[in-house]
Structure formats: structure tokens, C-alpha cells
Length: 291
Image (cartoon, rainbow, N blue to C red; front, top):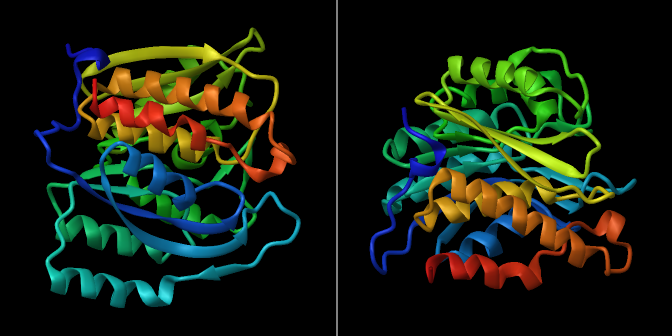
């Protein structure tokens, strides 16, 4: 049976720059989504092609924010892409503006059947859905599990996708494996469930796949939470995958990068709400393609 250390989702070829459709929202203030995905993936030598699912004045942790749902423009947007014959190596989806946008993602899949499917099902955290999400949107997002080459939910999102009751962040490996097995049964090829905490100073992420056993990857847990760390984690994982690293290396790299960026963030004003400060860590991402 293959180990995660020997599983490679993408083979980097020479000087070729892979092209990734990033289907996420764009936030004006507060670092998350496309504001994280574009620089992180670009630093890994990828051509990032945004598909904006919504526009936000600020992220949803702020008490006041404006949201513009872009659903009505996506058909014309993708029509133009198809007319130009754009080729993609990966499709990376995250925060959605409406349930109908799942159909737009599936349309991209249909136009690019060989592209990797990376799904970060951004729906909620700490046992609750995000304020702009609805039950209908969560049900629609479940359609993206089948065929996902890499699915990256937190425990809240895993609960929404599987229907298994959310039990907080302090859960045993057997409970995590139960969620992972259900997600694999639903059609995901590899799954990373992130954010398990036992209060012992470590944050644990688990990796599983259809042809390898579950692996635990741990890093130091810091005593504060930040907005945007999930987006940074998923983007960093994909950056390492597209740099030709194994899935195990990619997940380990992402955990370290998020940890180090959180330390930098703590030194910034209003760090609790501004979002994770990853900018000074981008050199670490660029080094992925130099190693």
C-alpha cells in the first residue's frame, strides 16, 4: 500500500509553469481567499487564474461588510475562457457566493477533465456555518466531494459534508478516521482533515487516501486563532503539490508555514481581525521550486 510520503499528485516538468483556476472570493480588507491564494501559488511558480465567486469589502469576521455575489457573471466569464481555449493543470475551489456556483465549478471540470481537483470546502468553523452560507449552499458543496483529488475540510466542514455530528476540536484519531472513511466513500481520492487539538501544545492534521493508511502530521499549536489560516494552509499545500512535492511533504510544509506566519502576525496591529500575515514567508514558498 502506498504511503503519503510516496504519493505525488503532480509532476513538475522543467521550466513549465502550471496554470491553476482559483475559484474563490476576493476580499478588500482582511487577508483570506484570493488575497492569499494568488501570492502563495504565484510564489511557487504557478500561473493563477482567478474565478471570483464574490467580492467582499472585508472578511466576515468584521461586524460590517459588503458582499457582492458574482453568480450572474460566471457563465459569460467561462464562455470567454472556453472561446480562448485556456488550458488548466488544476482547479482549486474555496469560498462560494451561492449554491449555483457549484455548477460553474463542475463546468470547469468538464472543460478540463485532466486538471487536478483541489477542494477546500470553506463553509464554517468551530461548529458553525459562516454567516453568508446556507443549508442549500452546504448541500451543493457536497457535490464537489466526488472526484476531488484533494479535499481539505476542517472538522466543522467534515461534519457538514458527512452528516457525522460535530464534537469539537478535541477528538480522537478514530473519530477523524470515521469522517475520512465517509469522505473517501463519497468519492474523494485523498483527504486532509485539519485542526485537531487536544490541548497538549500540538495541532494535528490527518491525511488519508483510497490506497494508503491514515497519517498524522503535527506541529506546535499557538494560543490564538487567526482569520485566513485555513486559506493559507490549503494554498500552501497546493503550492507544494504543484512544486512536485509528495502529499506528506506538502501537508507538513503547509503546517509549518501557517505556524510561522501566525508568529509574524502576532506582531502586527489589530492582528486578531486583519488576517494572517504571510507576506514575509513567501520566500519559503519560492524555495519549494529551488529544492
